[in-house]
Amino acid sequence: MGYKPLKFIAIKNQDGQPLMPTERAWELIAKGKGVLRFDRGLGYIQLLYQANGATQPIALGIDPGSKKEGYTLMSEYHTYLNLQADAVTWVMDAEEASTNARRTRRGRKCPCRQPRFNRSRDDFLPPSTKARWDWKLRIIIWLLRYYPITTFMVEDICAKTKKGCKKWNQSFSPLEVGKKYFYAELWKLGEVLEIKGYDTYIARNKLGLKKLSNKMSNKFEAHCVDSWVLANMAFNDVHKKPDNKEMLYITPLHFHRRQLHVFQPSKDGIRKEYGGTMSMGLKRGTWVKHNKYGICYVGGSSKGKISLHEMESGNRLAQNVKVEDCSVLTYCSWRLWN
Image (cartoon, rainbow, N blue to C red):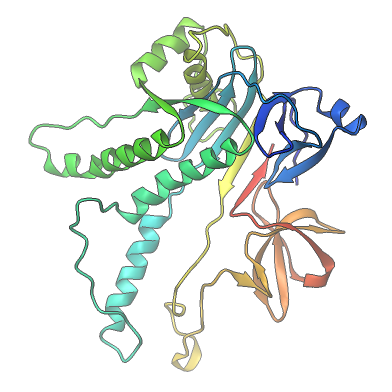
């Protein structure tokens, strides 16, 4: 799987409330005070007794991006976790393909729904915009289950409008609408502080930190350096340099849903079925353990067998694996490694 134990392990109280992460996780296990558990790649300690629930403020720095984005969990004393996530980028193309296919079916004797003219309502979000910002919310809600986060420090990305450039201004409207939706949902989870990009730039330079120009890099300096600076600003720059550059990498899985059949017919004009999220009774994306391939996730299926994929790269390991040879670990809609 390519997953190694983190320096700081999250802790949950006996009643399920998140406590402060610790470096002494293995002592708790050795003394029989807690058990090690995993939730979609994130290891945590479940205490077997009710401990004092006092916690310290923890800030989550969020650096949004078009392709990759950074998240950093930090308190006044430690940096607990750096996470770099790939963004959801395929929804716009998928919606366009779906729309074209539906319009084509109306000219044939195929099942199709009637046109719906409800796209002009005030609260409508384009599917691609909503998917991008919902992905960020999914990650944050996942982290909230194991860390007592009190403040969200978000870099407020702004789009400059240009006078007389209608096409330019319209292309950025989904960004502004999506951002407002994200902030509204985030306020339901905790305090939100919006930090302008130039303030992040000034704070980063003040600490002597550098940011890579290569946005597709998996190094700390690509995106997590900004999320670290943002989280540090919540504590008045108490940390003078990153004390923990340990990173998790997370990539959302792309599922093909609700497509009636393949677009290109095969021999004799036969159109094969396409899409779906089940493979021989298992949801695609399910994490399994195989004796030969270790921990991997389930892909498609063919002729009664399933395919397995590597966590780090997503490459297919095998496509003729029997379901009974796999031990199911958990269902997940992303792959994760460090």
